[in-house]
Image 1: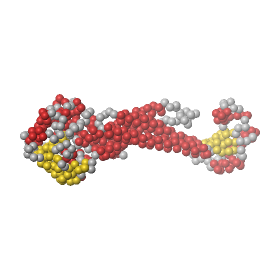
Image 2 (image 1 turned 90 degrees about the vertical axis):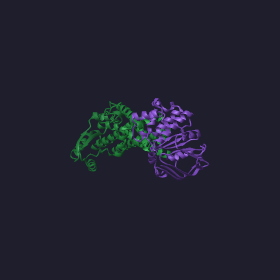
Image 3 (image 1 turned 180 degrees about the vertical axis):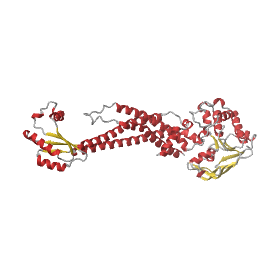
Image 4 (image 1 turned 30 degrees about the horizontal axis):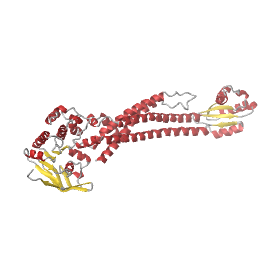
Amino acid sequence: MSEILRRILALLSGDAQADRAVPPTGFTARLTVLTAGAMAFLAVFALALSLATGRLADRWSAELAQTSTLRISAPQEQMAAQTQAALTVLQTTPGVAQARPLTADEQRALLAPWFGPDLPVETLPIPQLIEIIEDGAGYDATGLRARLQAEVPGAVLDDHTRWREPLVEAASRLRLLGFVSMMLIAGATAAMITLAANAALSANAQVIRVMRLVGAQDIYIARAFVRRFTLRAFLGAGAGMGAGLLAVLLLPSTDAAGGFLTGLGFQGWHWLLPLTIPVLAAIVAFVATRQAALRTLKEQS
Amino acid sequence: MIELDNVAYNYGGAELFSGLNLALAPGSFHFLTGPSGAGKTTLLKLCYGELIATAGQVRLFGQDARGLGRDAVAQTRRRIGVVHQNCEFLDHLPVAENIALPLTVSGRAATPEDLRDLLGWVGLTGQAEQVPPELSGGERQRAALARAVIMSPEVILADEPTGNVDWEMSQRLLSLLVELNKMGKTVLIATHDLALIRAAKAQVSARVLRLADRKLQLAGASL
């Protein structure tokens, strides 16, 4: 890797005379800049997706792992007694840091998305929910269920495992998808730049012939093309990254209600990560063009 | 310097020439003549490593051309100045930069004074900033000659250097090549212009070789 970086730095410091040997215009220049720009724009979103899903996975995993719910279904006249009995059990259960019954307002808020805001929960046979917050070690769910079954027959413990695992799994898959997308973007960029480099080499057959005639070595000829394509990819990717960051900035901001969908952005030092995209694009262009140039020059000799 | 030992070359399955022997000694002056299609350009290309002989051995400065890698061929070409028949240039660069190109690709830079002297020597001072498509045939030939000699090569190979120019310009180009030979350069000119050869023999001791019927022979004294 350091060898590649050394070559790239030498390349960027450049040989102005060698650079002038290749005509500066042509559709390959526009194609390279446009491709690098478009791919960098997509890469910003792939990176944002990957990081956001990573955060989601971590958050869901942490939040859901620390909380659980006890649902008490009982006749209305027994509800208060069973709730109190359940609280007593929970308060004496190791690993339970806090347990509290949800208020009528909190239960109404939970049901509001389905039944509307004015649901008379006090008069409906709705189960009482108790929120359980675990301490660091957590509690023994099997033991707690056994105690509840004996002392509070209408209680059902939901430790969220059933739906926590698929959510975390889904978020992890999305994160993987983001990385795969970035790999595909890098591969597609390399392929497009290789095509553009091959077209440029074919279009400049006379330039290559003349340079060979006067004693230019393959690496010298290749360097003139490689430098140009590397810089074009860097600049194009820089512009694409800028546009991508702007688009991410313009996304709706995260809030508690829409946290699932609007968290597709960067947080903290992650805003710096897109800055690596132009550099990576330049590395991809350098490797792709160099291989294409040396292969073509070998074939033409 | 450049030696061809029992060399044959096949083109498209047909034998262009065979059993060909040639030695270009330092400071020698040779003409290579013969009918069109006899293989003069091919022979020159063998002499600067552009082509590899089908059989026999070509030695460039003592090294078997067949064993040279592409980089080694490039290095060898810096010791051989070539004036091509069709004088190809980098059309987007000014004449001065085209002439300096052999130095550029070898990592050196021509001093403005040297470049000015060279342009003056070939009579292109006024065309230094023009691009090659703006030059006349004679100017292109002289620019090609200047480019061929800027590295001070040991050998000059010229392929029909007077093919596209009038008699006066031919004489001028010939004078430049004779002048180079007198400076110790080895010169080989492929041409079918017999008048040019006769004019040269009045100025320099030149051997005239004739490539015809797939063989290379010393031409008769009538030339």
